[in-house]
Length: 186
Picture 1 (cartoon, rainbow, N blue to C red):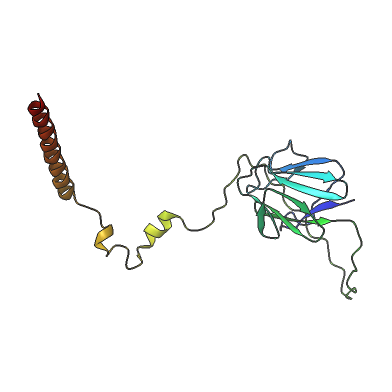
Picture 2: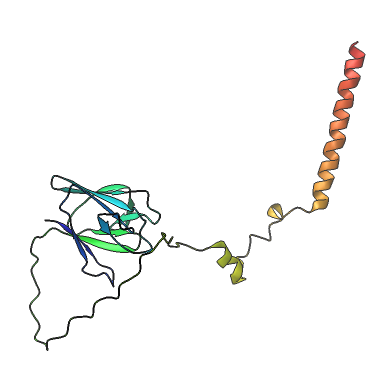
């Protein structure tokens, strides 16, 4: 039976067995597979088993669903591919044995301590991508060439007033000519 395995630190090894036809994935508790991470939407994706195929549908999530780094809305998942919901990476384990590396002789080590229980997150946290305008304004450095071109400089109020006055004068002249032409036609 195929199962999804979370790869993110803190949730590493957490699995979900895909044994029903339709599985919902998201941050809130009413999902079949809950991933309590702020980058995961409350109802992020749906996994549908169609025979031997595993179809993943993004449910219009905030931070998107990706397969091997490519964003998708619906795709067929195959073993060995990396799936990402928001910032949480998963892989499909189809249950087939993988050749294990040769054991290395070492002293037995204690198992890692259990991860602390996280409190549930109430809202999807939008993960920023790119640069914000406020970051550019705060840096104080400007790329040369943009503000030196007079064609794109901000016009002063004086210039606007001149165009407004000229427009009004031309409008009055046109109206006067129309009235004059109508009186001559009578």
